[in-house]
Length: 186
Image (cartoon, rainbow, N blue to C red; front, top):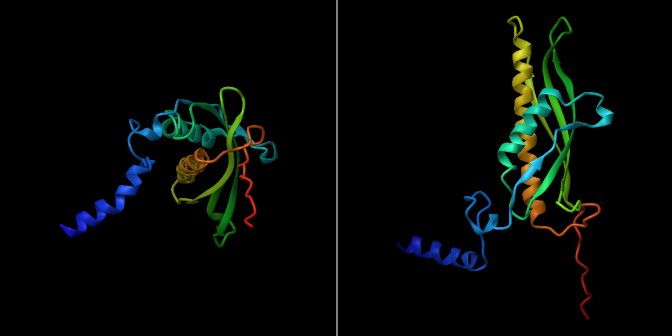
């Protein structure tokens, strides 16, 4: 009984300040100013020399599912993502064939407002490992599963950065956070 009273007393200041959980339902105050976010097709970063392909498709699907309905702090916007990916061989069998590899993906995202101003920007990097199977075409299934995992990890990281960016004031031309000027104390 006393524990419940202490918890209620500790949470009272949070309720007074308008605190709303980020992962709560979309009917709360956190989503009062949020609108739909359109997600453009995922583009390859020119230096990667590989099209986003399957990973880009999975990444866009995951972003549409998790971010498309809106994010706290953003009235609406358009999300552009550039994706670079590579396969890095980690382990080799005695015959020098790769037996374990990583899919490594780097996604650079930019959220623009309806007026073209940049609301947020960032870069995330994730990796998903896979083993080459002994069965015929087993490595294709392992690679496909790794691409799906990589896309899910990248989408989660982008969403997390967008949540953080939603609470910051940014320069509308660069998307970089604006640091308020501090006044020296006498």
